[in-house]
Amino acid sequence: MKLKFLLTVLCSFLWQYSGMAQTGLPTATLTPIPLTDLSAFKPVTNNWKLAKDVFFDPIKGGDGKITDGTGILVNTPGKGTNGHLFTTMEHGDVELELDFMMAKGSNAGVYLQGRYEVQMFDSWGEKDPKYSDAGAIYQRWDEKRGAGREGYEGHPPLVNVSKAPGLWQHYKIIFRAPRFNAQGQKIQNARFVEVYQNGVLVQKNIEVTGPTRAAAFEDEKPLGPLMIQGDHGAVAIRNIRYQAYGTEEVKLIDLKLTSYDNIKALTDFTTSAPKSEMDIDVLAHLAPATRDQFAGKITGTIQVPASGDYNFNLNLAWIPMDTNPNYINGAGELTIGDKKVLTVTGKTGIATGTVNLAAGTYPLTLAYFKSSSYWYARRNDIILTVSGPGVALTTLKAPLKVVEPVGAITLAVEDEPRMQRGFLEHLGKKKTHVISVGEPGGANYAVDVSRGQFLQVWRGDFLETTPMWYGRGETQLEVPMGSVTSFPAKPSLTFLADQNAVWPDSNAAYNNLGYDVSKAGRPVFKYTLGSANIRETLEPEDNGRKLTHTFTVTPGQEKQAIWCRVAEGSTITKLPNGLYAVGDKEYFVELVGKEKPVIRKTAQNTEEMLLPVKAKDATGVVKYAIVW
Image 1: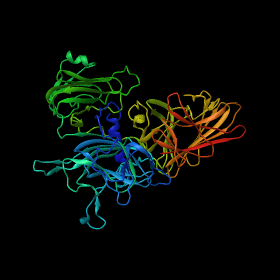
Image 2: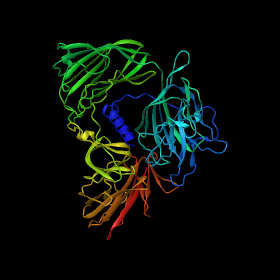
Image 3: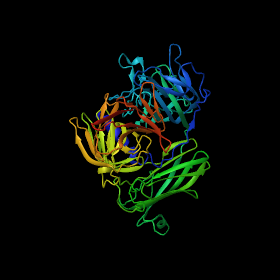
Image 4: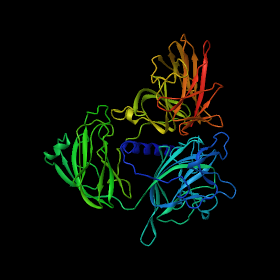
């Protein structure tokens, strides 16, 4: 378990702080597989049907209910009708994305080339995920290995971020097919480069030596169809999109580094004399220099295999994440042939550019400089990625050491809740008075105590705090290490003249009084709303599968009623089991008590759910649970 946790931390750190996560990275244009009919698939058995909507009950289970229509594939296997689903499309290297929804207790899988399985499973709340859980690469099987040893090479997910059955989840899979020589002999194994579940990296660089158990084919080929398993349990699939790639690559050759002194702007390169020259084979400033001040111009040749648009992303990770956009610590510029592709400057140090190139070779120039020390990473490496026609997203000439050997600073949760005060980025804005709470069951959450706003919940590990403590801690952020569900930043409670009054974005009547700590180690938030006194708690239930939110209100002198804002989403729909599905089945709300909610439209054309606080002369309690 310690090794798996360290791997999770390392992958998170490498991905986030290499600048490759979420910001500025060009992504492939994915081709959708239409689900208006079944023509994109080989003949299907009766267990596969098209639907407009599907309901899987997370409480009672069962095959669920479907609404006639198109857009969703639903598998409800039965006796004699349990066939797999195969695409007519065959692929080698591929980037694949899809949404999936599990029925309670169900089991399925998506097989790349019909041979290598990424597991789908109802792993909701599983604390110790195995090779058979969602996000896993399923094991291989060989009975010749002997009893008890037949299964081998299974890879559990790095972290379990599975949602409740009946909710939509997401996979992003980057797969590299096996390689064969001219005689058809395999010379390289298939590899899962990366697998993301619900936005979280769960597999990294996993080699598979052959087809996994229950594959459709026991041999290995350069191409094969996508397969969805249909004989194990009910599952729904939608939004299948892919980009297939060839085996040819973009290459950088004959690289030369010319170093300079006293470069303060890109224009200085034209007037400054070079200091030294050297041949290089990686993109890094290898010339003698300090870590805080250096400049260089890398020249060479770029070779592209096919004609079309090529997307480049340049990450100069040593440029600061500073709050002042006018502060320039460095810059960079990429030119191919006579075309300026991109320029890096400003607070992020990342830029993208697209250039149309015919197949062939072109001169390449990459100029860059760093003028001071002002960010905690302090790296001298340069990260240049490219994707294009038939070319998967590729990092060009990366140094072997991506980051300096400083460990990520993380907060783990063991047997008791854990609290952390700090700054948190929420929906693109920095919140400066946040308390994040990690729970042993993985039902983590964050609250803005200065405004009385319930910000988000997440499953998985607790917090990465490197940006708070390493170096100067410039961004000061605490970063959730799981799959985040965010809520609009609005007050949880307010006064309303009636149930039709507009919910405010902020609340002048709110006065924060801090928090107590319960015997269980959880915060009990205290504040006043006008002259009313409020105590607010969040407690996990059902082994962390849901988070119960409780407000205890002692009324004051105000005549207006206090209301609680429970949820907001594109839609809020009451389900047959009494739960409410929020948005596109992003999470469920369970109401505790007999009070009927008010569900209404907002000015932003969303829907929100409100509950009145019944407390005229005595203490009132409002309670509901987030299930996800």
